[in-house]
Amino acid sequence: MTRWILSRPETLTELEQLRLKAILAECPELNALAGHVRFFARMLTERQGERLPQWLDAVRQDDLPSLHSLAAGIDRDRAAVIAGLTLPWSSGVVEGHVNRIKMLKRQMFGRAGFDLLRKRVLLYT
Image (cartoon, rainbow, N blue to C red):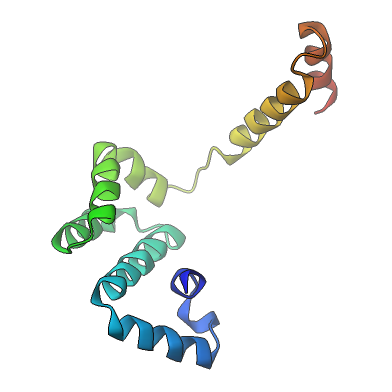
């Protein structure tokens, strides 16, 4: 069911759409959650960060405590989240390099000194 909620509706089979619709009709909280998830996904995929305040207000109006804590966390750094949802730049490449270096460090832990770690980091690029 989680996959159904997180998928684009047009990618679901007819049977999956019917089952999801039936489940959401039986549980208003889950229906509200699905609506918020889809709205946020649309903001993310279409870079509509300017709609974040509208999403936060809608989340606060529903009785979904877990989403309230998420909204509070997002609100603490609202400008950065809006920029992340709006701007085309990403730190993904840098994060990939950091992840690679951490993986090498974990592999080398307790085996050798800094000199060998340095050589592996420089040669692994």
